[in-house]
Image 1 (spheres, rainbow, N blue to C red):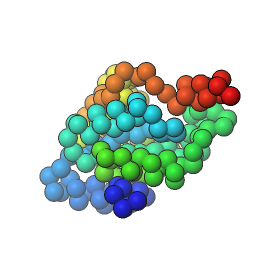
Image 2: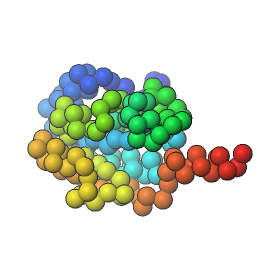
Image 3: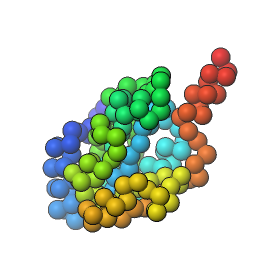
Length: 160
């Protein structure tokens, strides 16, 4: 993983983002389960990075993915999902969060921008008030929501 972004716990990530911000760069936070990587994920992360700044990706823990997606999920364990995301060019740092929402991570790193996919509007982002409370802005990035890990799994199931 020599060319990969670091995968950090919250205290180390908070220290890193503080140093990055002190150097004059903006912090961007994107988040998701990233269970089976697909082109929608790549376009979302490219869109987040295009906002301009240091891109942190928060990955839902295995426990939270199971709560969100149901039995049999995640397909890939959190450490492997984090490693895959850390290997992508736009990503500057990765962390795994175990809370039901990304709000505590937002409070810890205080991103300048919180990037969400096109399945949201600025008004429908659940954590928008916390983003604003921390001085950030919600941005909608990526391509239309035409891809999903759940749909891929369904296709795989139907093919076998």
